[in-house]
Image 1 (cartoon, helix red, strand yellow):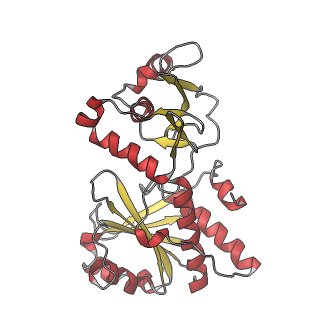
Image 2: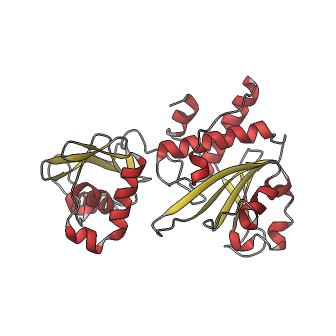
Image 3: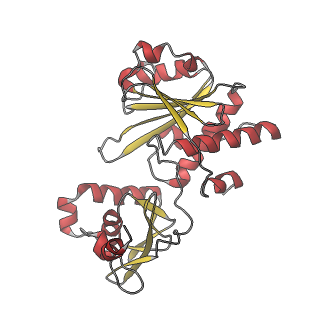
Length: 303
């Protein structure tokens, strides 16, 4: 992992965001600015694209980078497309109803600079690195167009340093805006989060709670076979497991699957269900070194 990506996995300094609801609708256009940063984000639903509050925004006439999000065809989670435009507006127009239309997206987040403007090479750099980070995180499937090799443009040393800082600020803002596709799990549990284990028939998984969800550690094992009850009654869990196999997060080794990287699940129960291949209550199936269930540890936490 390059240095700039490694830095993102570390704790960031505190910052504040200013969110302006431009049309008075909390679900409509929002303008988001970060303290002590020249960048600006525009967040809006697809349904607002033709409305004057979005269509006339001067920021869309600037060079920038954007992400489009929407449900996957199977309805299980999001799908992601990352793009750039010089300017942004014509590119978004083609994704809305033009020859590059993308039917899946329901919301867009665009980033531009309000100070010294971004140029084409700058946003190509940002686009390439966002694609790379999404591929590394393997949290949200990428649109087929983003699966091509991400090639960085040639930048001067100074421009590259500036764009690395711009990228870090974007990555800090995106989770606040509800986009977790680029997040890497923390490299170690917090001091207050003990390592937990989940045991099945001849297998062992290790994990811990984090602010990003429940993290299952690389090297953990998962059942190769699924219980009929899981197949019949928990299609979303089965779909998540298959997604992890398709992404290479789970790789078969002998009679079990093995996690090839740390992976953050949305809940302890989803994590233990994928590990055990059956319906599971993660609050009882994840236990610490003394055999205490996660439920007990959570109840013992000081209020």
